[in-house]
Image (tube, rainbow, N blue to C red; front, side, top):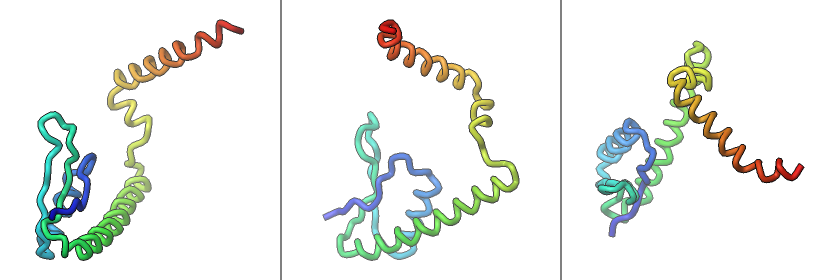
Length: 120
């Protein structure tokens, strides 16, 4: 019986490719399910043979730690070079969206607080 190995929702494509390559390198048979036509199903990577589960889990744990260290190193290098994205960079990339979000948050706060403000 197949066993779910990894959920794929919000997983970057490069990470999925690396996991596929890792499993192929160690002769672990996996298959991928999609989110379906409406995107409501759980996309996942499944293990075909249950007896390979301990090996697959050990490989994924080692991979996750290695990727974490690599991504942290890349972020630190970008941060030291002054090229890491900040909140202001994100706001500058799409100022219309930023202003729209601020207006929506303000409207929600106003609607939520007006009953209490009118009591004062």
